[in-house]
Image (cartoon, rainbow, N blue to C red; front, side, top):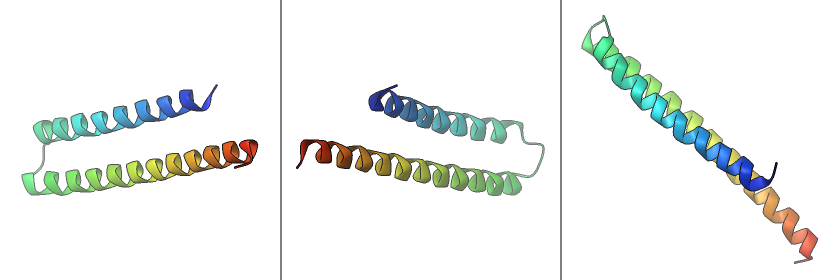
Length: 78
């Protein structure tokens, strides 16, 4: 599997993750059997967790891209 295939899979995963988190938050608001204040607090925590996971994944992708670029430069003797 090539680098671009892996990057495409990572971006697809990230898009699916964000979409799933958004849909899950909406469903939680509509179906929650608890107070609105408690539900909002839980949603804020879920959004923070999703943001943290997304930031970490983007950092990983950035590091992977730097590694690939460094490898390419070494092979081309730049």
